[in-house]
Image 1 (cartoon, chains in turn green, orange):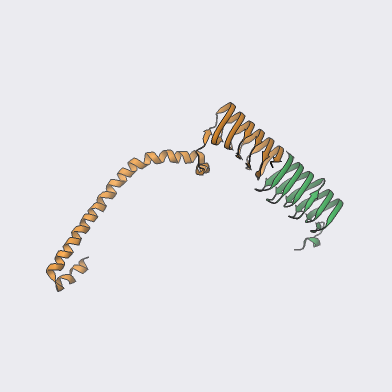
Image 2 (tube, one colour):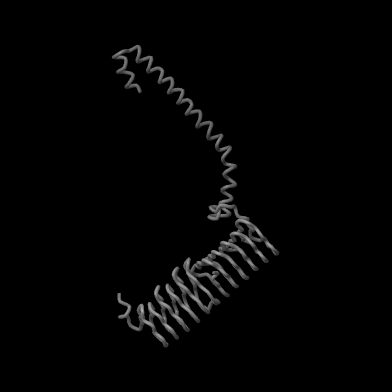
Length: 108
Length: 172
């Protein structure tokens, strides 16, 4: 399935750099670079993806890099290739072996 | 055996009967030995093995999978409360309560265990509660764990359901 065709969703491909704010009711898949505010239901950061800014999401799945203020109300998954830096707020957390997390954490 | 005996007397009865008699005798001896040995060995083995096996099984029961590790862990069992400074080589498994400064190779906080203080170790497994400051190389936080504090690690894995408050830092 091509993620670009999904409704209420946004896809930022590899090599694309985006600055600004995004509000997507459904899903955001980021393979490129994102700088700014992101409010989304489900956030997926691919291996090449880098997200910096204030992120608010229900579910976050990190295979790439995620920086700054992160709020994942339900589940935050950091995969083995994932890197998370900053302030973390989460409902549930799962970190695969090899995943890197730096920062202060608190549970919602 | 009897089938071989019967054709044998037809050709050369005397030789074969003698030859046949010898193996039979030998076999009988073997059979007797076989019969005796199982009778003797089970009693000997059961008498010898059961007491040696029992502590091992007990050890496995308490430690479960940890027994697979090279060194035997020291266990602070449930209800045990320790306050102070603790230093050890090898493994410590905590089911009780530990308060203070701990330096050890491998520390495991069991699901009923509680550790509060400064921990310095290589491998750190948390199934129970931890609060304080920890410096370790390999950190594993299981789903039943509650972590509150400051943890410096090199490799990290957290199971879904674990509760972590405070700071996680990556050592360089």
